[in-house]
Length: 220
Image (tube, rainbow, N blue to C red; front, side, top):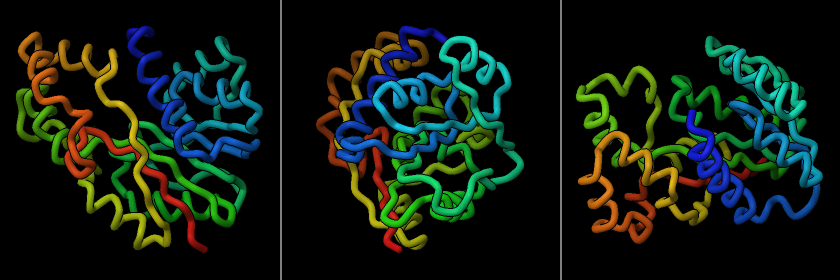
């Protein structure tokens, strides 16, 4: 992965957490899908008690070597989280939710490990905009289903959490970042970048945004 682009995406994720208003006091935080451990390390620097999970051994080794962060191994074969009930104030995940086949079970498991009034902060692509992009990228009508098996639209993702006993709200985070533009350039070339400038995705209403930044708060 291009580390310059990685940092750009990281900054957007951190902005989302800050704009949520939930990092004002020290929290016990779980990140699901921590990748190379950058966010867990940053949250610890900010005074939070943060832990992370990961499925990729290479990423786990990088997190240990680069940040001194020991990530917890989880399996893609189960939605179970190896933590106690009501252990965390916040659970966060970035570009992970869309890869989890059993999202109903996943949300229930997140709810289990959250404390009273705890929140799950999720960044995930919008089904309505991501599918066309993935079809163009892969030049296939179906390949995206192999890795984005749980895409939701604006109404579906809210319903998913409401049925599980969460309230929801969206946080406005700029979408057209250097990371976003370079991703478009990589897969769609200069015409794609020009189209982004013309269409101005940051001005779109929430239901058609390319990505959702969602705060789901446990009601009971």
